[in-house]
View (cartoon, one colour):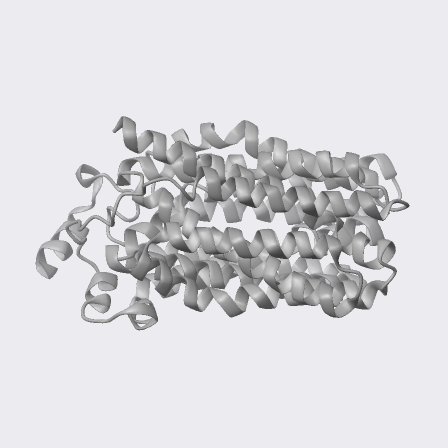
Length: 428
């Protein structure tokens, strides 16, 4: 177990390094393309579009690679692409070279995520996974926050070399990820007794994406995850930020404080929330996250109605981001462990990649919808739409319960209702 713990520590250090690199450069890519290279906002938008499309292009193939070759070779390939893309991005001076660099950067960064998630599963027992994924989430937020802070100290738009240094340092960060985590000897996939459930039955005899599509529980989880990432993460730095600055009139400096409040909330609450959720159904925690986010959208309505009182409106905006952090803390120890429990051992990479693909699509679509509604001046419609989506999250979380086994939903056998026990015995 000590050896496994050492491997897990190396994986978690890798997660922190990856997050540090993201926070280090991603907030400044628009400024770099638009102002430093002077290529305009259209070129900057194209760079972000290519970055997102790269993720969509590689994710369908990453899972197959992880299942066939293991997560370590895939991680090394991802770090190599990301390092080359980040370095080239800092050297590029024309739109075509920036777009090619952005594609490599996005493809490499995206490749690392399912590989790291698979490594966490391989290095933990089922009882430990909620804490491991919660710690991962905490380290990711802490790493991104520190990265953004350090990057902000280096960035100087009047000095193009400062941005070049920024992306060069990120390239080195990815090489550090390869050295620390990519060299760890990850245990092979264990063949564990399958839980009785529709998902395992659907996956039997099928491979790759066919098994995932046939798994009703996994499909429902992916639909719920898509809605969650559309409603929360897809609005976090786009729709809500646009609402705060353009509708409420919140200064951009205060918006940075609000984002900091979100990260601080997660770092402070995460391990406490883990202990709270360990004794409860995972679907209950997911529904509770929806309820908390509903309160966040209610706070947004308050901010819109009292925007003439700048101080009170600013407090409301900061509260929105803090409430989002509470909901995120509830989700961190629940969703990824469910994916791991649903996945047959031989298809863990495919399931992680499919889950990541759904998240990526939702995060890509969410900002477009949010900014469009806020930008058109229909902010009440925006808030109503997001509140409706949040209510749907609560309903879908409770509906998912019927497609999970007690173990997958973190229900102790002694607490399983007799009706569910009879159903499981009948299936067996």
